[in-house]
Length: 304
Image (tube, rainbow, N blue to C red; front, side, top):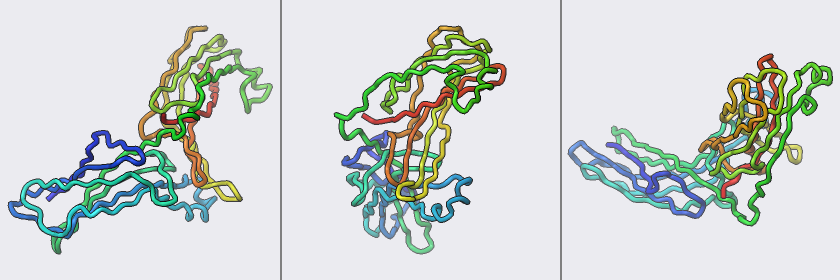
């Protein structure tokens, strides 16, 4: 006996208020009807949070208080106890994607310290001495921008990097760094998650040879709230790194920046009381003499 869950949408992507439908496929090849004690679906949506190991010792009481946030909860009886005939039986199911009372839905997101997941699990308990069956599937939830009138304006973010613009660098060290000037722009500080991250960078001059230029996309996850004296833990981790230049580039030549936001590992920016999911981009320039400079750009992501 085997169980399989199938959704009508091949991409398994749904939005709040839509109907999620599919079938439970039961297959028996033992040559006789198969007894069971009922077939039940459990639909769950949760926000799971955890602290990095370096923070556990600092916030022991806080660590114990981080509990999953329940977003969706359904129990659906697909079939009562009985017997299934030999061969393949398909049992349909459907439910409306709505949050539990007093809660809101967030977009599916697989992070390091914050994880937002929506699942359908099917259980088929069997009579004594027979193995119970269980099968599960994840479906994706997209949260569009509710207020289309408040769509973020796309304005270019211009930047210039030279020794005088470096932070956390003393004046004496600035003077020891070989002269350079790098400028460019990002298409915007607000990006459509279905579109690309674009911009341009130009190395106007550099006395030292450049080894590489990289663009790094990072997530900044915050668990808990620092409001009203509460505790929170904030961690930044890399999602992906894109090499823009390998070797010393031509001076004055525009270098395009083009990066796709990876599915599941990015989502629209979330800032709520109990957790935050934010994003940044780091422009990393590695010089052949060993110096490395990093320029940080906080960005926001939205879904149209």
